[in-house]
Image (cartoon, rainbow, N blue to C red):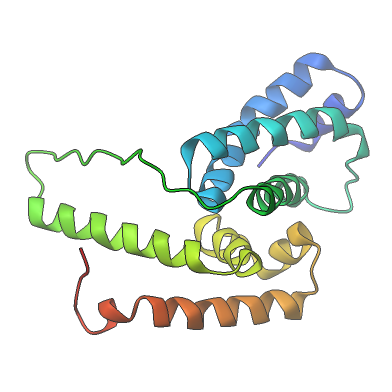
Length: 182
């Protein structure tokens, strides 16, 4: 993800290295926040808060953990805190569907509905299950990296993923039968 030399330079007080480091991870931080909170504005707020925390806490990073898992733990904890503080809201911002001329419009519409239903199913998961699903399937973290990021035992991560997959399977039952909601 990031060169260890850049991290060490940032930790030693090199401001340019720290700014470069933050720029290198900002997209990853935002993407993770967006997958967890599923709201663009909240994700931007969480990402900004995470980057500020990384900026102020870079000196406390120890190389016994991978840098990306340390960053992931910060982002995930901020997002979970946001969930606990906020009441559920309905976003009025719907993403516009943009069709390219050569694509099959029917397939594009179907994939949009599928993606929306999967996102809604993930949102219905308990927060600890949602976090492991996002890290595993959307951020492609290994089980060990998830355990490090969330400060959980490896078997708990496996258990959460197993239960989350069962819940998603139940929530997405329509697709297993070939049906589509919408």
